[in-house]
Image 1: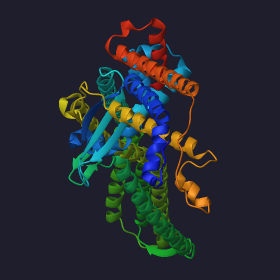
Image 2: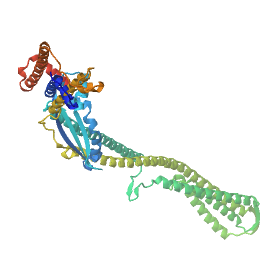
Image 3: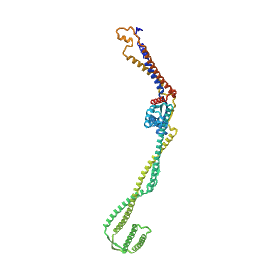
Image 4: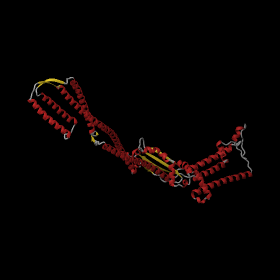
Amino acid sequence: MAIEVEAAGQVDEFIRVLKRRVWWIVVPLCVIGSLGTFYAVIVPKKYVSECKVMIRDLGDDAGEFGRNTAETEGQVAKEELESPARIEKVLDALKWKEFQGLNGTDKEDFIKEKVLPSLAVSVASSGRNSARRTVTIAFAHTDQSKAPAFLIALRKEWTGEVLSREKEQKKVSLKEAQKRLDELDLDLYSLREQIYQERNENQLPPAIMTPQGPVTSQPLAYSERDKAKVLIAELTEEIREAEDEFRFKTAERDSLPPDDAVEFEQDDPLSLELNALDEQINRAELDIESKGWAPGHSARRQAERLIQKLKLKRDRVRTEREDQLSTRQVVRPNSRRVVLTEELRALEVQIGIKTRRKDELEVRLNELLQRTESLNEAFRKLDGLTEDLLVAQMSKQTLSAQVEALKVEVNTLESSQGDPFEVTKEANVPTRPTSPNPWAISFGAIVFGLGLGLGLSILLEYSKNCFRSPRELSRVMPHPVLGTINAIRTRRERARAFVARVALGGGSMAFVSAVLFVTWAWSSDPEALNGEVVKAIDKFRELLM
């Protein structure tokens, strides 16, 4: 029997506990370490492929799209590349088996749970106010060939859609602008036709272009109207003066006696006859003037012959009066009254002629006023049409410039200069998986198993309510501990403990060996495994993807 006089230290006591509970440490370490190794080998490895696309601003020929491409497309690149609709389109084009057999809802879940978490998009600027943006696209997949294929297809789909969308927008804008230009040409033709018809209908001469603008010569109707107004005003004044003179002479004639008693010579009756002939001649001349006969008119010729006869008779009577003179008093018409009467008759005829002339001019003036009013309306309409024509011409110039600019933009976008995207780094097939790290997983499992075994052994050891060492006993006993006696176990107890250790160790080793064999066989030669085991491992891998 061994006697221990002095108790062991704390470190020795802890080591002794670990030795007693060594299986509680070894078994979790081996089991969890083997499971960790199995997981590190079985878990699907993800291969990350990366692609970089630089977006640059184009020249002014590409319009607003070219001047702001880097900023605009850079801001929405992440949203467009991570668009579920775009990703679905790309996956349909790639025809992935795991995606083709899904329905609409399952496809959405596949994209949200499998694709989007593995897709990373970042946009970096080349500097403040820079005309360049770099878009980095990274994608991780368990199949190392699918990662770059997906990135290339996604990049082409994105850049192609942006370019085709902008080209289509420019083409639509060009088509609409060309259509508006054609409509404007029709409007210009219609306006010119209306101006021509308006001028033709109103007999207006064409406008003459001057440095100050188009000038239209004034029609004769305006000058004739003005002349008619002046003549009417003059005739009105002359008629008023003649009427005043007529009233004045009428009053003077009425104030004179009708007859005068005068001394006359023997031939004085010839003077009376002479006066009567003069009066007849004057009346005939006034009749010719007042009737307005043409020179060849028969009545005019008859009146002229009468006047000629009267003048011949007057000359004969004048000659006789000069040869035969007699002196005696006789009563005869008042000579002044006779003169005034003749003058009044002449004024009356003159007033009638001028009044008739004034009436004719007023009728003509009314016609001219209607004509000028019609011309004024025509000129107002022409002014409106001309203004519309000028506006349409300016609009056509502006629209033509816009059409030419759009043509340049479309041609630029159709050429290589219209592509703002430049692939600075193409997606390549990765040679090594990036995640997960099998060594880190295995090491973590070993550490976790070791920690779990130590924890279990310490928990089981110190959870018993007993004295485990002389040191603990000396703390509660008033007397010192003189020695210790080792545990006394019978042969049966030792045999039972040995069987338990062999069973636990053998079972653990068998489990660890089986796990390690399955791990080695799956990674090296899957045909060595049972088909059910392979299916189970594949299902397990699908859950981990």
